[in-house]
Amino acid sequence: MPVEEEVVEPARHFSVTACLVPICSLYGAAVTTVEGIGSIKTRLHPVQERIAKSHGTQCGFCTPGMVMSMYALLRNHLHPSEEQLMEALGGLTIGAACSLAQVKDILAESISELPEEKTQTYRALLKHLRSLAGQQIRNMASLGGHIISRHCYSDLNPILAVGNATLNLLSEEGTRQIPLNEHFLAGLASADLKPEEILESVYIPHSQKWEFVFAFRQAQCLQNALPDVNAGMRVLFKEGTDTIEDLSIAYGGVGTATVSAHKSCQQLLGRHWNELMLDEACRLVLDEVSLPGSAPGGKVEFKRTLVVSFLFKFYLKVLKELKILVKQFSVPKVDSHQPLRDPVGRPIMHLSGLKHATGEAIFCDDIPRVDKELFMALVTSTRAHAKIIGLLLQYLLT
Image 1 (cartoon, rainbow, N blue to C red):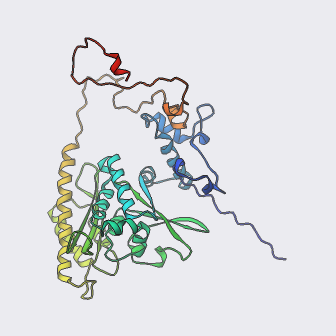
Image 2: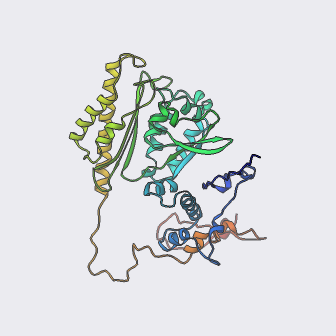
Image 3: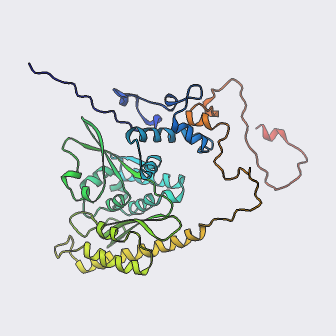
């Protein structure tokens, strides 16, 4: 008689923002909270212990989220790379059904809240979103539709490709992730969605210090016009130097899909950011990004000029930013008479660190309101160092 053996798939762990997850979406899922992996009353999880004892918390309000991001990463990757660690801690996930107008607002908000070094990719995307079609179209067109269409003139796909974006896919079998790279944009079956899958969301990681991302486009007019050529370019330098550690370049409008200059970028790794590198880069990119006479839209020679022109502009923009960063990057000399017990600059855990890491810290917003409670507000003077000669309480109480 036939015997059916139950197939148990391995558990898949992922971190989420609890306040944004509907209860109904957790049917059949196991939920682990920061309080569930460790407590000061029992024992700490190693992640909680290290982030506390290495002075990884400040006010502690965001610490539980960092702990659970690392916890989920370690459950999926026992020995994660430094790149995986950085990706797990920072990035922006945008729903595929969001309109381009909503994406524009989300990026603008993130740029206003995050340090500039983390928003290089977001700034490049926002630049193109401001000129992509018109407001009416941006209100109706979705991010997912724009990506999945893989139009050769897409203004966003070149930037998302060089920014190492990830596509989160959903089907009845579960979820999986695929990179938005040159293979996906070329429509290769091995890097594409399966027939039963849909695009759920797009993850765009934060940029980092010594990383620069820029976007370029040339069209007949600023809005409501397809670009003749567009491009997304990203470079990462070894800290404190002008040595290229990673480089990505992608062009739109020069082929049937977004084209990546992957081979050229690989040959430029380890080079210094100077004119010799630029000359070599132009030669390599022109050889790799070849435009046949049947290129979309024609104007082959004009487009070849734009390919090199964008690369030259990228070189100049990065060179300017690099000079600013190099000036800011300095290591002060340590005073030879500094006391041995001086704690300045050392990762010393503060008293609330363990409670921050376990989610057991009590903040003002966690305390329920009580009857007739009073509130305190800081009042600043309109005159510095003035002598207070009296208080008019009636104005303070109204």
